Image (tube, rainbow, N blue to C red):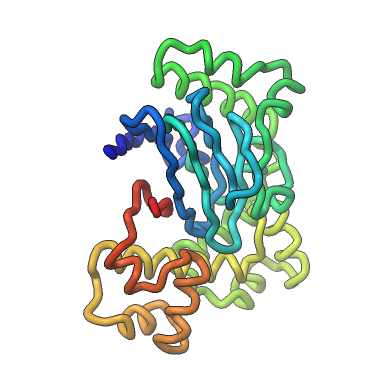
Length: 271
């Protein structure tokens, strides 16, 4: 089955909050697919524009037509039946708070129906999207809605947490959190509370996921001689520690990922 993936850059006024939009379609009328989602330190949005497609999370919870998903503390799965036609927005780590004014930890390892939230604000988002004439038009509508929410809620952003995120990302997750707290003038408890509220997970877990993501990128691009090199480069105690962390966040061992993972889009692998 052919999977048609496209990535679309966000408009300039969203570029600090949305990494990119994406669309994913298949050419089969009926199918059943399972995707494994890796922990990546970022929330997002998915719109299921096919009336014939049903999405379940981990084969249990049926997901709405348009939903927000929060931070993942480990890997999980999406199970889809029917004709696949999705639009997604891949956010930056603190976008749930910045765009929607939500406490991000309310959505950690969970999803929320975006329809009721939009309707409270007088926007029938799913109905509008369903009536759109094309996928670019739908993405334009989503962008407009996100920007409207951003204008209402951007004041809830914390420059302190934005700085903390940037330091963890730039250090590849290897920054000493004690040094970061000292730099910010925050106690351990204060930083953790603020970080959970704006990002959805603790700074320590975010750092661990960032280290995993850096190691994952090394494997994707074949930038290593052996696994012990990756473990050393990313401050893992040893190769076994690295393999355990990789399996925790991806559901694969590094060897399994390299040999058999079929990443449709980064951090989403078809099983």
